Length: 167
Image (tube, rainbow, N blue to C red; front, side, top):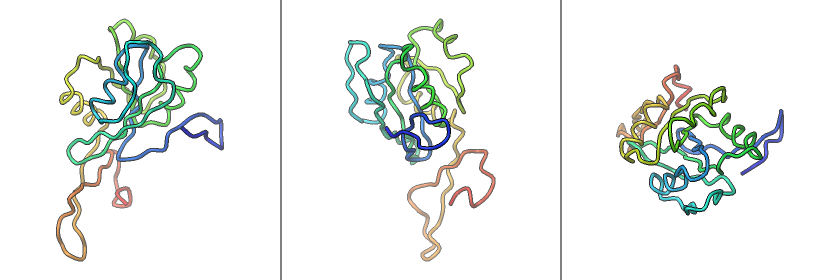
């Protein structure tokens, strides 16, 4: 994790892939387990609360598009501002809940996109929900020299309007 150098400061992780999704939640909501399941990245997942101390990134592939997931430490009063700073820089916050009553805690949080889930949601369905909630579209390009289609699509947010957005 790097410290921002200008402005109001804050913490961020350099974005990789088409989009960045911050996994949030209280202790033992399954954030680390979900990161391991969706990305095969190593993040210690134990029944002990507050096991994750630093942000752990991992890459999830869906439909040829790479999406970066960030496993964040469990939210508590001492790190709330650091977690919410990461969320402001991410393209989406995926909040893992133990139960619906926890939703009220996240009201008023500044996030570009916000999605709620539980660790009991199926992984394939959750990948699809993440992709859909991000509002990504895939653009398949051709090599100008050979005319052959490229294997990997360029992913853009639906708000992108110009060819330069794809560059």
